[in-house]
Length: 450
Figure 1 (tube, rainbow, N blue to C red):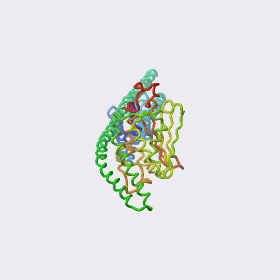
Figure 2: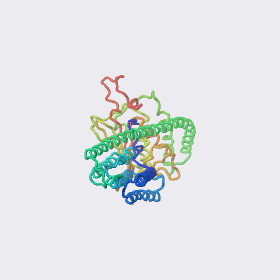
Figure 3: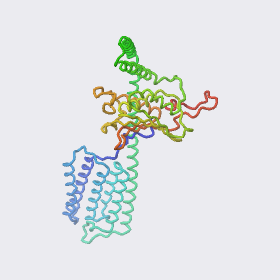
Figure 4: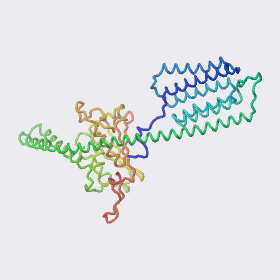
């Protein structure tokens, strides 16, 4: 598995809790109210009290409406959270317009919504809020009511001071916004990396446990399968030829298939197993061969330069993983399964496609977790014979151990069926053997996977 980036299903979206914004706005309402009353009543500065309290009351009414409309645990998506923060910027601009504009030292509070956005929302949303602050701050430098002051004459601050105030506000806006975003982004990346690592460790733990269970199952099931094979053979000898001949043949084939499956499970981790160099077409044919006699057309296609066809060094784990996916496709297909290989100088890709019902939308994002069944009962599995959901988990984990990435999707309408694409970097495959053979061959696919 690629540890440089987390799986797609772990990439967190930028959300913000509504309760957080509501609490911060109540804090702002309380602070603004206290400031207005202190300036007007305690200090005796003249200001449009009714208009200021009306602007503050709008924020309180919005908080009440949001609290009644949404639960406390509601999480806002990026655009919605950005709109609420934009309202806070506009509300503060309205208060500053009534109390001196950019001359008012409280204009520094413009930084608060931008910092909140930088820590929790996308850079695009933060940049939009920053642009709104720049526009409003520039407007307030020229258009505003007089700054509250005890003198009967309006205070006129030097234009150079206002320019310095504007420049300082812009520098603080950019510095704090970028710094807060960078710190928050590093925290998000660390959190994603930890989540990805925990997921991989959990899956490896499940697989390690299943390794022992597979060995125990192979040992315990060996004797019953031998007994079933013996009884089937005796029954075939005792019964007279008739319509049951095909059933007996099918029974023998299935017993032999069970033995092969158990043999495969016990050989997945044999480090000293002999390797065999295989071309891509040969590998695919070996995988699909056991599944051709189930009433489903199996097509194998190889798309790529024949002169640059990848060569494998035999890896039982990879063969089992792809074989499990092909077997599932055959089980769920209505009439056809297509296995397509593509390659170029950078990557090698195998896609398994069927014309069955496809993946259920509610579980497609959870596939690959243990004990999650892939789809509804297939052609060869009645509804009452549901599986444990371990087959795809084991196959996916084994393939990712080899360096592969799996992508699952359904066929676009009007087509039906599932599509599973397995992609390896070309470097994971063995290079052509040097002339004369010997030990100079390049690193095997299995070794590269570890």
